[in-house]
Amino acid sequence: MVISFQDWNLLGDRTWAGWKNYEKLWNNPVFWQVFRNTFVYLILGTPISLVISFFIAYHLDKTRFMHGFIRMLYFLPFMTSAVAMAWVWRWFYQPVPIGLFNNALAQFGIPQIEFLRSTTNALPAILAPAVWAGLGFQIIIFMAGIRAIPQSYYEAARIDGVSKTATLFEITLPLLKPTIVFLVVFSSIGFLRIFDQVFNMTSGDPGGPLNSTKPLVLQIYQSAFTDFDMGYAAAQTVVLFLILLCVSLFQLYLLRDR
Amino acid sequence: MVAADENQAPPNKRFSNRVAKRRVSMGQYIRWSVLFLGGILMVMPIIYMLSTSLKWPHEIYDVSLIPKEPHLENYVYVLEDGRFYGWFTNSLIIALITTLSNVLFDSLVGYTLCKFRFPGRYIVFIAILSTLMIPTEMLVIPWYLMSQSFGWLDTHWGIMFPGLMTAFGTFLMKQFFETVPDDFIEAARIDGLNELQIWWTVAMPLVKPALAALAIFVFLGNWTAFIWPLIVTNSWDMYTLPVGLSTFADEADVAWELVMTGAAISTIPTLVVFLIFQRFIIRGVVMAGLKG
Image (cartoon, rainbow over all chains, first blue to last red; front, side):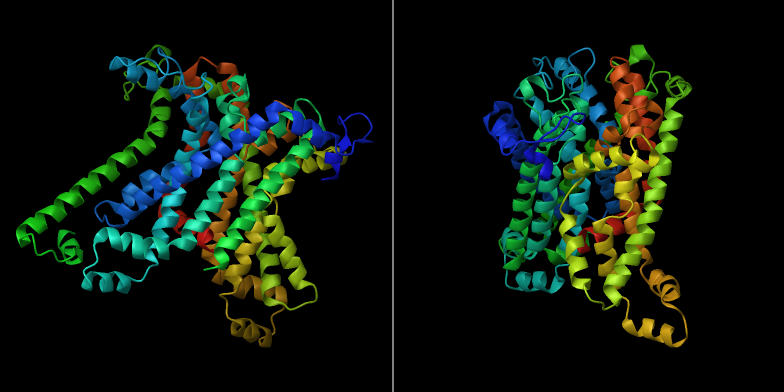
């Protein structure tokens, strides 16, 4: 915290810089780009992963045949290392002679898609493995939440002739609120901290074309350990901390009215 | 399976019984197929990684999943390079030590906070809770400066020290020790056990599932940790597997079959462990997720 007010390149003397680092940050267009990227990861990643995982959990809960095996399939990516998988996905995204996705597109005669080299596609392309790896965890937590709802509520609803959709929206979702809040916060924090995937999928040009994929954590890493501008990096860390604090306080607020 | 679902289906008078039955079982069939296909899609990247690591270089542009002539040359090549052994050992040492240390110290602190009344207990607990939401990424700069001034850069200790105790683990263990009845502890005290013995012989066995959950989380977290080992190490023989893989893949660049082999080497251990202890791990994840 204190370092953020100092001018320090790790080797020389520390000097007091006051608000200079924050001013630099405020006036830097790259910082705003990075700030925006971080929130795009959050705003796209959290709802997408939660909707998919709830959908799967809801239906998997009603499936008995090979239940354990299917659950295992969905959970397996959670056990992988983000670095290894970032490289696998990076390979998928390569242009035509190499990449799996573009090869498949070529077979159907569809024009190529530039994944990691385009300023608009690169961010979703990096988000995909992050969502993919987290799904298993969310599904398992959702299923535990669904299991915890007493069966008698459903019986009562059935006797009253409530439709399945209404049961889902009137019973399942409201009673899952604590689970949903937990997962929203957990995955939001996860997406705000995204680093491993970005670093590995865009190494050589960290942060992607024109910084279009760079999240705050990568920016902090570069300021601190590539440019050795510790004060500036610390100032950015403070910003990240404030964001995370807001998310956590928001969680407390939501949980209170339970 | 179908019979059970029939019972759950809402009564619908507009359809005859037979139609209703067929509708439900069709729905069930579609649901199962969609889920199954989705599951297969989910593991596709892993399967492709493994399959490509068995292919010859000229085959890797082939979309086909099954290598024409599967072989282990890539593994031989990558392991002969020698560096992977070191990275693997580093990762293993660090993950094992941090896991042991967490299981021991988190539970010790959690137990103390839970079962003893002492002045300042509440403050300590709040202090631990408040660090719970500060993630690694926020702390790398202070940690780095600390390791620098203590000369811990580029050492195993430097990689490990931040993770030897975690707020999450302490909190989790405290929550679980709440479920140990105070009567048991009282009884042990009357029987003349000292406090450490009570913790070890009475309380610890009762929270075994929680300890297992904690161990899994800590091990997986440290095995896959990237940003901190990347920062604190700067010579390749100190790298952990993820950091090593990242540099290795950067060098190998176009030799994708070698990149996939490296990725496979760092992924297979956790996958195997998971396949063996599957039920156990999923239960642990649920427990940690819901209590934490």
